[in-house]
Image 1 (cartoon, helix red, strand yellow):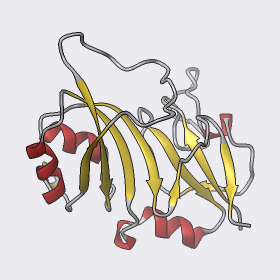
Image 2: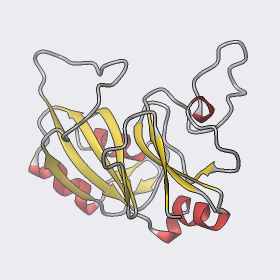
Image 3: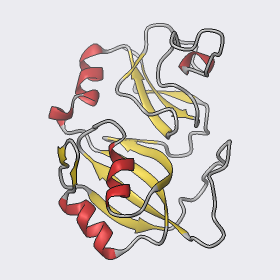
Image 4: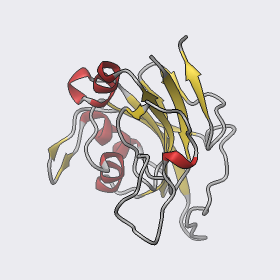
Length: 183
């Protein structure tokens, strides 16, 4: 069994092939990982960055990806505006999105994470609007859920980086690189 951690760059699809853009290829995992037999355990949107777990163990892949196992996924989220106590409380108790209520999350304001790499392209910055960071941990994984949650409480996401999945974390893994875990 092989399990690896990958720090996915912005703009990379969380799959090995891109059949939907004939003649206009987008970068995929195959641009970074040349290791046969490993598959992503869950997805990370093209415009999100950070930790992905890939494994050759189908049971482990299912445990990570399936919300019924409640593996926590923790994100560093840069939002437009200065995050408020009320917004953090709303995220912590759960918000109601168009597809129903979210489970309670762990949400707290944080300084910009140390050792953060530059994003290419950089985020859109507005001179008159501040930005802030929060750490958000959820135990479900709806489509674009974190972005929809922060927008719901009035703070649109500018940058989204997954920092942890269960016990695994990015640590000092450089963007665009991977490492094996376990034996």
